Amino acid sequence: MAVKVLVVDDSGFFRRRVSEILSADPSIQVVGTATNGKEAIDQALALKPDVITMDYEMPMMDGITAVRHIMQRCPTPVLMFSSLTHEGARVTLDALDAGAVDFLPKNFEDISRNPEKVKQLLCEKVHSISRSNRRFSAYSAPAPAAAPTPAPAPAPSSFGSHGSSHSTSAPARPAPAPVPARAPAASASSPAPKRKAYKLVAIGTSTGGPVALQRVLTQLPANFPAPIVLIQHMPAAFTKAFAERLDKLCRISVKEAEDGDILRPGLALLAPGGKQMMIDGRGAVKILPGDERLNYKPCVDITFGSAAKSYGDKVLAVVLTGMGADGREGARLLKQGGSSVWAQDEASCVIYGMPMAIVKADLADAVYGLDDIGKHIVEACI
Image (cartoon, rainbow, N blue to C red; front, side, top):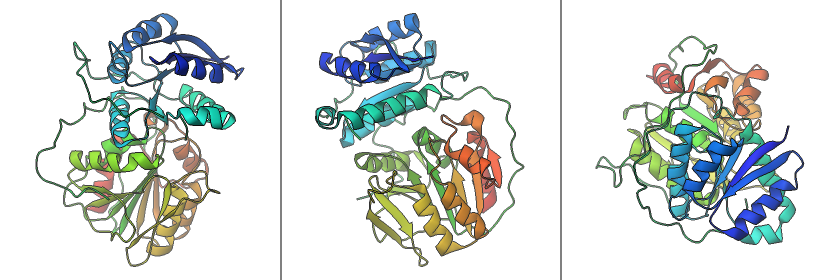
């Protein structure tokens, strides 16, 4: 059965182009279009699509407000389009908090220059999020406001695929709405972990990861005794904004990793988008150019593998929600060295791909629901 898609964008050109690209795939059916957020809600209720593609900046109602309403009334996987700017990253992260599953950069030049690459990427994203857990969970998003609050408009968008120090002062902006919670689902869960003197916690994730990392890291205390490295599949323009967001929300410090950074307790270093992050035996971070031969930049396998070489049996690795199998081979190296590997359970994943690869390869020492992972990391390390 074809995946039914609703395309939402105020640009007639972009609606037509996205519809043409998707319709060229025989397993995808564009069932409708909308020009603003209010139309999107009406069409979502009437057409019951499997996936919605959503722009942010639109008249009458913006995309984030529309996502909140849709998640309240008819939970549906949403793919956001985003500009590759710092402001575009901030808006996209707000959309993910509101309930969107994933996002794609929006680059009009790539549509004309690399049409086959764009078609493949967009169709793959639509197919993957159509299988996500968003629709099938009892999703409870925060109640939408009576009227949308105007937000700064992102820079003109273009479709295609430093660090902040921790501050104890009040956040410059209100914290995002609480991450929506799913109703409890039946799932096997491992016993609570035993304490061990870990020298590093390494967390890898992809689709659904920004919200999952927020849920995990906000449970860690300011005196958390181990350094943390984070590998999130994300464009280069997004990781700095994401690190800044986490830094404001968490009691630990979070920053985008830079070459030469030193691991220290209570500091989480986020791998920069478009590059690779490795760790040496002295606890120093190496940031390397993204290798074009690798699908993921950053790549979980690369960071996990370097951690295995540098820290032996003293690593706690956690693989969260995401598409594909990145992290499996790095986890294999960690296990061979005696380190511990945990996987997020299927019921709490947006996409049960990366954790499933860990479980199927018999590499998981424990499998936990998302809301239990943070507290278990604390139990294992403190």
